[in-house]
Structures are given as structure tokens and as C-alpha cells.
Amino acid sequence: MRNVRIINGIPATKSRYGSHYGERVIEIGGEKYREWIPWRSKLSALILKGHEIEFRGDERVLYLGASTGTTLSHLADVIDEGVIYAVEYSAKPFIKLLELAKERENVIPLLYDASKPWLYSGIVEKVDFIYQDVAQRNQVGILKANADFFLKNDGSFLLMVKAKSIDSTAEPKEVFDAVVEKISRDFSILETGSLEPYHKDHIFILGVKI
Ligand SMILES: C[S@@+](CC[C@H](N)C(=O)[O-])C[C@H]1O[C@@H](n2cnc3c(N)ncnc32)[C@H](O)[C@@H]1O
Image 1 (cartoon, rainbow, N blue to C red):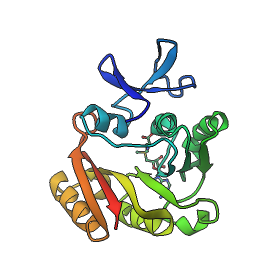
Image 2 (cartoon, helix red, strand yellow):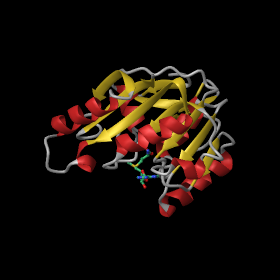
Image 3 (cartoon, rainbow, N blue to C red):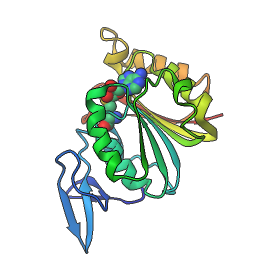
């Protein structure tokens, strides 16, 4: 992934900015890199496990479930010439997210419920990529609704799925199979994979709008 390198065994993003969540900033050859902690970020875990997602750096991205901006801060280093619309509905993490948006011109913070995309349809433009990490029971519906509103044809998405947030009693594999089957009704799935050992009972689903 552009602007990412592995330093001391973990991913790090080249950045013009300082630490956002206590991660170390390392200087190499006059450039600053922010350590991207795989236990704190599912996207970092995905990279560390050898999966690749290509970005040009000027994409329009919709990020659903941005929380305090941990992963978002790194994605903003990667998409440094694009725009990321960051949706979070909980006021507490949103305060920290606002701190990030104040220093990053490419982050637009939106305090909205991602299950109601029509509420922010006047703000968000068509996007190339949706990153979703809402840990909600209805996450497939949330993805579909947002893709219908905002994802360009041929645009792609990355969905992070936590088995326990969908069904806390079922076997994770059963939950994942059901989610993959549901998603494949509306999207073309490119890749799925586990995020273990960094995130227990989590998988990612990478797909494209068809
Ligand atoms: C697992 S955390 C996200 C962590 C974050 N993606 C990261 O890696 O830094 C899930 C977040 O999704 C938010 N969330 C859950 N349902 C949501 C919804 N319907 N609309 C907006 N945010 C939602 C939660 O408030 C929580 O902050």
C-alpha cells in the first residue's frame, strides 16, 4: 500500500503529522513514519498478514464507524491527496475524531448514523471506496444502503466483520459464511480473510460494486 512500510516488524505510514493515539513516530532518512499498531487497527492487521489493497492516493473514501480516528488517521496518510468522509454516530469518540479533522484537511467528520445515509447524502459525494467497521448486527444492510447512495460503479469496499456483534452464540464460521453469502447477492467479492491473531473472531471482506 502506498505510503506504508514495515518498520520493526509492523506497518507504519509516512506522515507529515504527529502521534494521534500514542503510537510512536519514527524518523528515517528525514521522513516521519507513524507506527500502525495491528492490535489497534484491523487494516494494519490485514496489511501485516500480507494482503494488499492498492490506492492511488487521490481517492474519495467513505469511512463508516470512524470512532476516535485510529485507523482513519493512517488511511488519511495513505489517501493524502484525496478526501475521506468519516461517519461516526457516538459523540464521545467523535470529540477525538474532531481533533484529527482539525489538523487533516482531507478528513471530513460527520456525526451521523451510518444506517441513515440519506441524512448525509447532501454532504458526501460519489466515492471510490467504502471502509466499514461498525461492529453492528445490521452491517450488511448498512453497507448496501451506503453503496447504493455513494459508491461509484466499479467502486470497492472493505468490510470488517466481528462475529460476536452479529450473533454472540453462533460459531464464528457460521456467522461469516452467512455474511459472505448475503454480501455476494449484491457485490462481487474479491477476497476474504481472517484477522487473527490480532483481532479475534474477525474477518475482512473486500469486494466491488457490480
Ligand atoms: C470497532 S469501532 C471502530 C474502530 C475504528 N474503525 C478504528 O479502527 O479506528 C466501531 C465504531 O462504529 C461506530 N458505529 C456503530 N454503529 C454505527 C452507526 N450505525 N453509525 C455510525 N457509527 C456507528 C461505533 O460508535 C464505534 O465507534
